[in-house]
Amino acid sequence: MKNNIHIFFFFLISLATAGQVDTLKQQIAVQSGYIDIKPELPDAIVYTKDADGQVYIVHEGIEMWCDQAYLYSKDNFVKAYGDVKVTQGDSIKMNSRYAEYNGNTKFAFTSGDVVMENPQTTLKTDTLYFDRVKQQAFYRSGGTVIDTASTLTSRVGRYFTESKKYQFLSNVKIDNPEYTLNSEQLDFYSDTGGAYLYGKSTIISETSTVYCERGYYDTRGDTGYFVKNSRVDYKNRILYGDSIYFDRNRAFASATNNIKVVDTANQSTIKGHYAEVYRKQDSVFITKRAIAATLRDKDSIYVHADTLRITGKTENRILRGYYRARLFKKGTPEEGNTSGKCDSIFIYEKSGITKLLTNPVLWMGENQITGDTIHILNNIKTEKLDTLKVFKNAFLIQKDSLGYNQVKGERLIGLFTNNELDTVNIDKNVEVIFYLYGDDKVLTGIDMTTASQLELTLENQEIVATRFFKKVPGKIYPPSRLPESDRILSKFNWRGEERLMRKEDLFSEKPAPFLPTIKGIPLPEDEGGFFEEQDANDDPLEIPENSKLSPKDFINRPEDQAPLRAIDTDNSNDEYDGGNLNRVQN
Image (tube, rainbow, N blue to C red; front, side, top):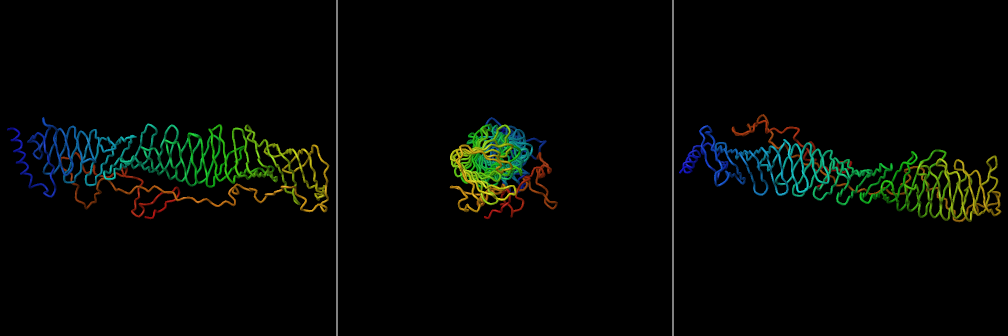
């Protein structure tokens, strides 16, 4: 009997208010609950949960459950208290201690331990706005999103139900057991786990630190793609590039265009236009104008080859250069520059050895040295040049004003003092041609001698003394008696035109590499503010009198807006390509 009376009163109140509501708007309906009419609340009908369960409310696809509800039929507005649940199909499920819903504007507000769930993520916050017309949820008092792999936090957040995208602003952070990600602005897609990073961003783990100002990271697959001032720090090794691909599970990173790898422990830098870094193997692969620069004895030694590969831990680094390898070191006027060419090169820093392999040629000052294999040894303590070794078919040529001084033998060993070659020993089947001058520097003869061994003494790159061992009597020819064709030894090959005179010659006669166009990452579209902007001529906001919200709660604050976005429609497809903003042609 009591329930019948309550229903009768509800029927009378509904009739009384039916003519006062907007008949074009579908009314919020309460389908279960104990009805309580309170004289002090003449505009509200109070529903309380009963033995059959919670109060149940529906409106155009949205369902609500709560312990107690206040329905304001005139305003088409409801307030829900206690263990509130709000669902919208399979897309949105919210729990809170309080919620209010405006049926005219389809706008909801929840507060108190708010939890919003969708199929892949769970959002926790203190207050949450939900606009059913836009299908967007918004918070600005701090929130946490729990994904299958990570936990994301930010001060401001916005969720787009149709695209399943979260837009996080201000103090954005992702905590994962393997890393911590921080960003100024981040778009996160809950269905894929993909995160787009905008502004200064870092991904820090025990083994690496990634930095970029625009990028993408797959939080579930642990792979990323970074552009704009991007780099990856692997403890003693830093990788830079216009674009960088990163794979955490493989401990792998690759960089494209204008790459640089800095080895802070060994004071070396490698540049090129494509690189691969394998952290676990302590391996780096560089190609496309690859050049390595190592600081040694306060000067840089440059090594170039079609492909450079560096392997080994910090104390055991080995550099290998394959195909058309070259090296260059600028020297003092007394020393002269040192440069060389060969098919491949091997440098082992721990032992201080550099090997020039396959058709090598070395220029030290004015001396050209060739052989089957050339080794250069450095003193690992002083970092100065120590010994030069040439194995098989050693040939030393020094260009003279009127010809060429030449020495050939089976093996050559040279010694250095303060990086200057001052002693040369040639062993086995030694043959020489020397141009002899008088005190007036006039050519007086050409010495052609053979011996078992020869020792040369040099000063300022010039031969000043010779010492033969087991010398076979030679002959000094007057210049007029020795034809030009007889003034060279067999296998003579002067390659002076190939000599590197400056660092830029490392790339001489090599075409510039083709650089691919970097696929950029566009700035996010300007979604506008979450709340509708109000002009002075607009009608006042439709806020029910009994709402906890006021007009100031519906203002888009500047600090809550995305700072990085494609502001102009014409520029919405701009992409960053590592140095230039290139318009993508649709």
